[in-house]
Amino acid sequence: MAKSKEIKTNAMRILDKNKVKYKVTMYPCEEFIDGIHVADLLGMPYERCFKTLVASGKSGAYHVFVIPVDKELDMKAAARAAGEKNIELIPVKEITPVTGYVRGGCTAIGMKKNYPVIIQKSAADFDTIAVSGGHLGVQITLSPSDFIKVTRASYADIIE
Image 1: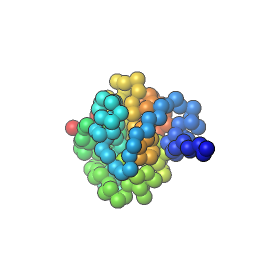
Image 2: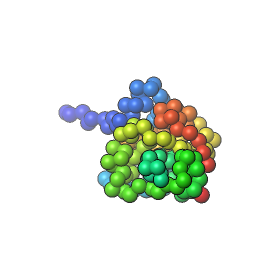
Image 3: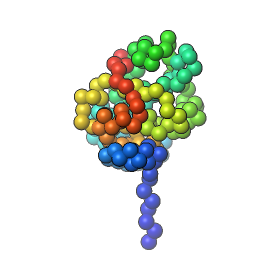
Image 4: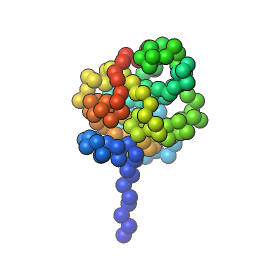
């Protein structure tokens, strides 16, 4: 009998390489579903489940913002935190070429390039947070400090 192959995403390989403890949770998913539905599927509180948003600044640089799934990005606060005059979320069709991940499976861990990452400061209030695992249907739970370590992220208040 063939053994089913375990999904090992680039994000997981990076966490393993950095000896970071994390938990993987998989759920059935064939196409994009929003973070609120993922949190509901997994029975996780919204404030501990984070989504990853990618924006480009007036300078042309990309910036990654990680916020609770039930919140909206405050564009002015995010621009200030990124040191930009203003920012705009990138179009959905640019997510894969810019990050290497698909919409709904995008994580700040292991993107194509090391873009600056800013995470909502409320993440620091929890022992663990959940982020996408780098593939549709995969969530990773880890400590905020480990997330900061592997992404070189900084904390800021970036939600409305």
